[in-house]
Amino acid sequence: MRKNVIYIVKYSCGSYDDYMENIIFATHNKSTATKYVTRYNTILKKWKEYYRQFEEKIYSINWIKEEFMETKYDRWSNLSELNGCFWEEVEIR
Image 1 (cartoon, one colour):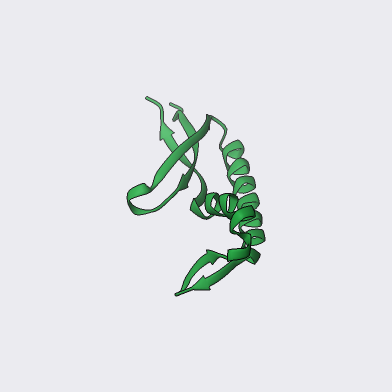
Image 2: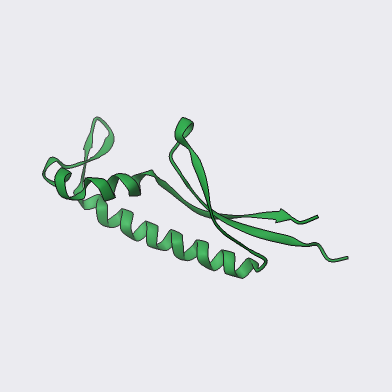
């Protein structure tokens, strides 16, 4: 008897009380889920590294520099909340 599974691809954001997982899609193909997660996390890493140039450390916390507050804050804030993408295997009964 073949085990039927589905792979649910999700991303998470926030921490502690505002932690949330959002479902992106579901598939029967594990390689499709893995490829998507790898690509998502690679792109996320690239953008987070790009926006680090607009940060400064204030009391050991990374925060956006004052001169970029008007132009870069919204995107920087959204990216800093994202934790990454992952897949979860669920057995179908």
